[in-house]
Amino acid sequence: MERYDAAKRLDELHMYKYEKNGAYSIEVVAHGAGTILFSKYDAYNKCLEQVFSSVETLHYEYDSLNKLKRILYNNKDEKPTEVAIVVYNNKGVIEKIVGTGASGQIQYFKYNDFGLVSEKTSVQQDESGDEKKQIVFYEYAFWQ
Image (cartoon, rainbow, N blue to C red; front, top):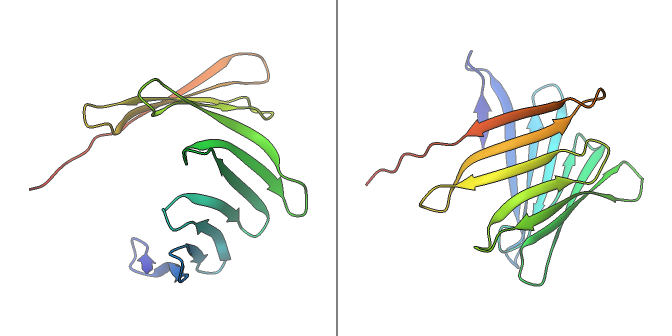
């Protein structure tokens, strides 16, 4: 897939590679920067790993019910360490993602009547202990 910028110049290439078992990977190559993202997915579309600019990696671990359990991070050849855990509500959807790393960021999720994310609130404390909050609202349009 090709992506073009506002001036209609080729900006990125997205290359998809599929395995016989249904697993696949997506490589995003930015014009002039090389590979900026390489993601691996299983046959059920679960993201297993994302490598950013060949330096930083996020690893996604799932529980026995195939629900995201925790996220690990490593830089180059370091051993992956946990940076977040995922908490589900009684309806089985993600209630929050709690950062266990230095940032300590917590992301809270609200859902609409269709079960889609309608609001994501990110809360983080800065060095002075003040709480910073960012809220993102999601709207959906459905065509028939």
